[in-house]
Image (tube, rainbow, N blue to C red):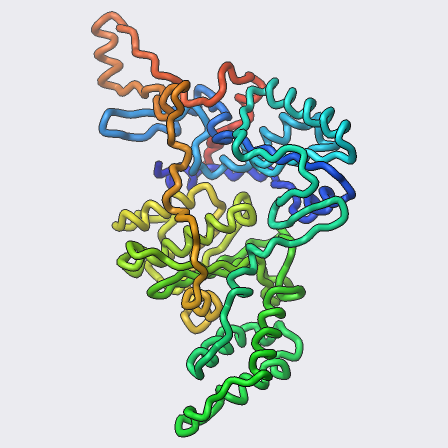
Length: 443
């Protein structure tokens, strides 16, 4: 559903997400048992107030329909969902951490963990919130959460956010060496002793045209290359935690066979990286138009970096100028429009154009992509219908003016009742007022 116009006039809900650093540090305080719970189609378990449903109306070939539950794509859906979850599990705060639809229960003994689990389940049952059993991990000694593996004694960053750099192969030709040093050199002002470390590579990349055939790989060049990779994937250039005081920046690029993206923050005029991503594009995607590939690069980075991006203000940098208005105006391209619709739930402040020569690292990573096992564009987005539930899209109908007149003239014939989209039954009334779907701005 295209909620761009509705989001544009909606007053932003500033309910904060939990601080990522504090969340990780709290989980690492010597707990022995962890349970990770995941809600089933979390947004669709939050009912909408009756008077707000009409604002979600959309057109289909079969008529007008409206949501009964919280849809994805609305500007205030993530903060609203966080508020509901925080309120529902407020009595469990001492042993439970909530980050959107991820619930982590932590305890120092097994018996204590059973008691904590029982209390959490009671709160979820009381509020008619359902879990997805296949995505729940019960009573483990370690847990992966927000990019870290947490045990009783250690907090270890996962390699997911730096794999795109770690898996870069060493340059084997002069052309590859020039491209790699050119991409990394953009960060030279933020890396101490960059010139000293990179000197062995510069010594061979600065050969004149007549002497380029003399290029030879040496141990010194290999050592320099791996040292530069280490600098890109460790502090201070790589940040472990987000600071929500300023927007984060996502820079993306594409090549004929891959996409690349870097998530960054600026602190006191210095650029720090948070997440690197690159991957191959499949055979069908290689045939996309340039604008479609660039949009695809943005979407795949968002999907991969979701836990870092959702609920935070973000600026997108792309070297493809036509995409700068993708979140404001309709672009006459179905694939680009689809990406724009999928990005509606994120707090995108602006999409800005960046010249290619300033987009070095994403460009380099797109030319050295990592193969991906899954195709994240093939998600069903929770639209599958279970056998024991009514169809998810069976929504309450919207009465049009002509239909209203017809009903009046036929002595108010009864309107068919469509099954609710809510994944819960008899949702508690105390949650209904939580979603003020659109406090509209006064023009």
